[in-house]
Image (cartoon, rainbow, N blue to C red; front, top):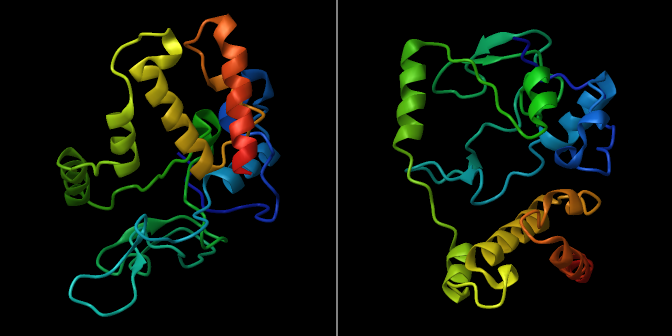
Length: 213
C-alpha cells in the first residue's frame, strides 16, 4: 500500500464542491482530483485549543500539538524520532509540513479525512487497540443542551420529531464548523422527509446559512 505525504501542488485551491457530495460519475480518479482532495481533506490547517493544542503535564512550556504538526520534511521514507520524540514513527516522503499522511486509494475511495500510520512494533499495535477500546468520548455540551430543549414525540409531523430536529442540528453544526459547501447540501440533507416537506425545509435552511454568512 502506497503511503504518502507528498503534495504535487499545495497551492491548488480545493474544488468548490465538497467531495462528499460528488456523484460517482464525477469521481475521476485523476492526479489533479487527488491533489484537490488532499488540499481539502488532509491538511491540518490550524492548531487550536482544545482540539490538538495541549500542555505537557508538569511543564510550563507552551501547549504543543498532540498529533505532532507541523512535521519535519523528508525527501525519502524514514523511521524517525523527530516527530514523536518518545518513540519511533514511520514517515513517508514529505514535502508539506501540515499534510496528514494518507494512501491515495483510501483518500479517493473514502473522500474524507484519513490517517495512515503503520505500527513499528507489536507493542505499538496493542497500545493502539487498548487506547481506543478504553477511550472515553467527551460529551458535547452544545448538543447536550440542545437535546434538553427538543420535543420527545412527533406531534406535528416528522419536522418536529426529536430525532429529526436533532439530526438537523447536528448537520448545521457540521456545516458551520467544517465549511461543508452549500451546493451539495440538497444531496445529503433531509433524505428522511416526504417530498412535500423537503423543499420548504431546504430553502429555510439555506436562508439560515446565508444569515450566518
